[in-house]
Image (cartoon, rainbow, N blue to C red; front, side):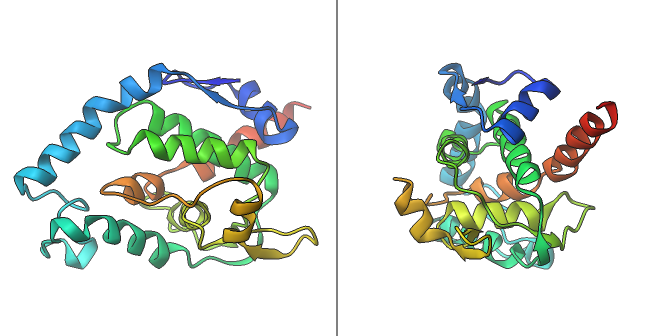
Amino acid sequence: MLLSAAPLRPEQVLLVARNGERVDVDPTVRTAMAPARAAIERALADGDVVYGVTTGFGALADTIIPMDQAGALQHALVRSHAAGMGPAVEDETVRAMMLLRARTLAAGHTGARFAVVEALVALLNAGVQVWVPEHGSLGASGDLAPMAHVGSALIGEGWVRGADGRPAAAGPALAAGGLQPLALQVKDGLALLNATEGMLAMLVLSISDLER
């Protein structure tokens, strides 16, 4: 299937989530994402105070982050929220949420880089199955914990499903799939985590099951 800025149909999500269909990114996505990304980079260069971009998060919203630490802040955000527990979410649900988040980022409103979309799609196409624990979503601000576990795998620090079905380190799995860990830059981590695609993925799959 071809991923663009246009909304996905449920049947497209099912093909990728359950059938492992390959995903290609429409070249127009890079152009669609460029304006919002440029706005983020201008804010950073101008020293503007922008939550989660030039400041910390939550109680640290008044703490200004030096420009040379903006990328480290995004990595710290992913690590701090990858704190789920319990058995793994079903593989098809994780694949669906990754696809849906890639599409949301591709719409060009989050300020994330095109490289984040490319990394999510590459992970799907390589068949690397991210291990996302079942419990831990905060819900109010999105599926933060589940998406953080996806993000931690993207940066090569999380877990994937090993050949024995148990969690295995993501770094070697990325290397085996010919993938490089994603180096997050300003806004990338926040754009990955602040999402409701976990809930949406479960809904799409549940409706399909109900209809069947």
